[in-house]
Amino acid sequence: ANRSELAPHSIVMYDVVYSAFEQDARFWKEWKVVHAERYGPLQGGNSIRVVMDLSFGEIYPTAYSTGESVRPQDDVRHDHILGSSVSPPSAASSVTLDVYLLSYAMNLLKIHDTKPGNISPDKLWLVKVAAKLREAEHRENVSL
Image 1 (cartoon, rainbow, N blue to C red):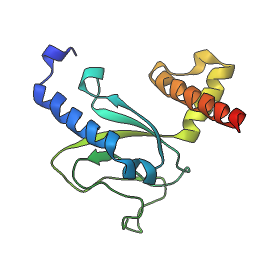
Image 2 (cartoon, rainbow, N blue to C red):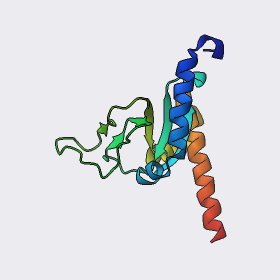
Image 3 (spheres, rainbow, N blue to C red):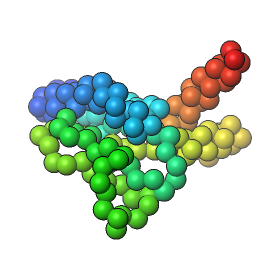
């Protein structure tokens, strides 16, 4: 959709929530966010793409709210199955988080390195993120 076809309110609300998300250092640290990018109304979606360095089976949030955000230490009911997700408390403005594990991104990169045509086009952004993270880690190891 082009900008003129989108409801101005949806663009503004997305921008407000995304801006709060970008600046929420506590959320990024506690949820081990290593990358995030817009996938909002102007990009054809309505979410924030997030890569978290969590272990497979850990519970993760499915939305980010300008109100209260779910934190890892929050009291999560014991009947949740590991690997499921939790939503934040209701708030005035929230955006869906499209969460990917860093290990999944790195596995996609390995596949892409050996068989580039085997990656779904909608996951190529994730391969690019993994490549940037791998390069940054490599530079960090070389400088030690």
